Structures are given as C-alpha cells and as structure tokens.
Image (cartoon, rainbow, N blue to C red; front, top):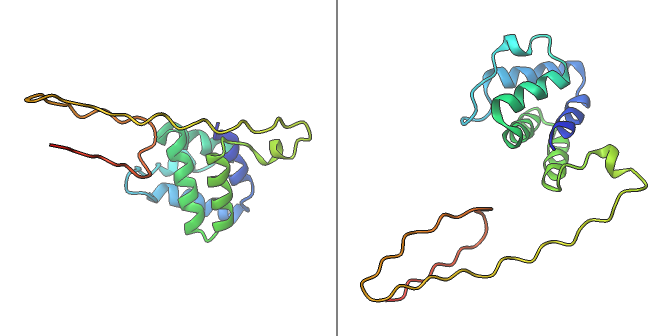
Length: 143
C-alpha cells in the first residue's frame, strides 16, 4: 500500500517545499494527469494531499507523480527512495527498521513460454498480454 510511503515522503518536506509540491500538483507535472484545483490543496495536510492524489490519480500514478515532483524540486534522493520502496512492495522506513521483520519471500519462477500453432488456412487472434510489458519479447512467425 502506497499511502504510508507517500505520507512519509511528504512528511520529510519543510513548509516551503510542501508549498512548492502543492504548486506542482496545481499546475500539472505529467501530461497524463490533470492538475488538482488549488481549492483542494489550499489548507491540506500531508495526509489530505495523499488522499486527494490517490482519489484523482490512483495509487500507482500518485506515486509516479510524487516521484516526478520531487525530482523537479531537486530532491532526487527522496524520489529514488520512494520509487524503490514502492517497487519493493511498499515497506515504510518504520517497518524496515522493525527487529521482527519477516524474511523476504523467494521470487516466483517465471511462467513457462507460451506457444501457438495454426494449421494451414487457420488464423491466430493476437493474445491479450497481462502483467508487465517491459523486458524482451520474442515473436517468431514461421511460414
């Protein structure tokens, strides 16, 4: 869950930087995200800001927007920490310092390679790809 991570990232901002963060939200930081009206942010606390961002953008995009704003503000270290913690499953700084933290689970094995065959005069309809779309994709078409 990204909400504690986002609140932690904003808690680390001083008053002046939090004001600048709100300005970026009001003016739009990513082309794919509409700006948030200043009336929704005027007296907002860090928790209020996170709530507004996640309601408007969804959890993952709220993290992406926060990372981009932190970078634009020159706070690359905080941006990288937030990005890495979110990618690692949302562990907060407080949880990671806990002495009774359970060991990390082993990564899951990759799924088996998929294959499709068509006989003469057959048609294959393109499959829907789910999961990650990054990485290497090999597509072989044999005639």
